Length: 171
Image 1 (cartoon, rainbow, N blue to C red):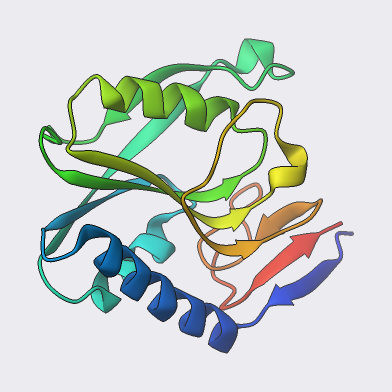
Image 2 (cartoon, rainbow, N blue to C red; image 1 turned 135 degrees about the horizontal axis):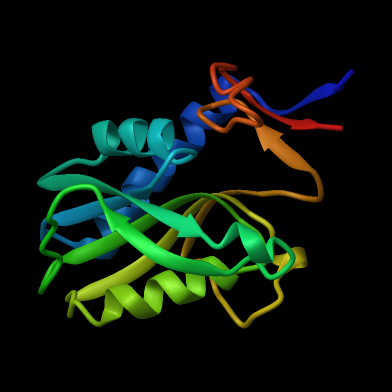
């Protein structure tokens, strides 16, 4: 049986999301900004962040399709834009649940840069710089996390625990 250990409480998440929304607005200035969430884990984070950003802001979602035949390499073979999203000349903030090795995010950001956004920044709910295997910097992070698998606040393991109102590790 798995043990769930609360790491960041619901009120702590709410405070950090509000602060992060203000940081993103400051970064974009008066310009519209666009949140590009990576499914499924970032869905709750994107929704809460979007509602807290003052001024003009939009959002969309993409999914990364991993090559599961090479599970050890954490490689990505495809990006699925769930609807056609034009990010050209937009201030785009890619929103990810947990950034660990950075392999997928590095590939994703390189692919998105080819679509000529005005600005492209990476936002993480949980940043794990200790787990990096590539040179990648997260521009904005709600929390810094340690080892372990995270659940709650939209993050799931095997389709479970995404409904928890807090973030926890599973051991």
